[in-house]
Image (cartoon, rainbow, N blue to C red; front, side):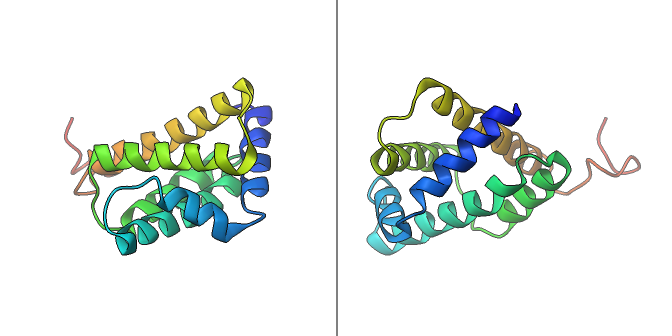
Length: 137
């Protein structure tokens, strides 16, 4: 991600957070499940983006922060993660208006960066990737 991409993500997020209850509601209404389950997932999304957006400009901080967020939640499927992505992007558009192409692209890049961490954690369930003795070649 370029510095301009990071600025697009962080400025859009700040704008969306000006009314956090409305942002939370906009995300929750786009998720599947009971109202309590949707509210819990929306809260996690808001906390995750709020924690990750400030460290996008520091890749060495982003990966551990993302991995910590992933490990702190209940297991989800790839389809549920995709639904959460769509709920987030839809809520951003609702709260901030239609996103310009550059902003939409920047969010896609940020989400892809998070997805890389999800894959690394999910495809290394025993935490062996960083241990050359235990890692599978």
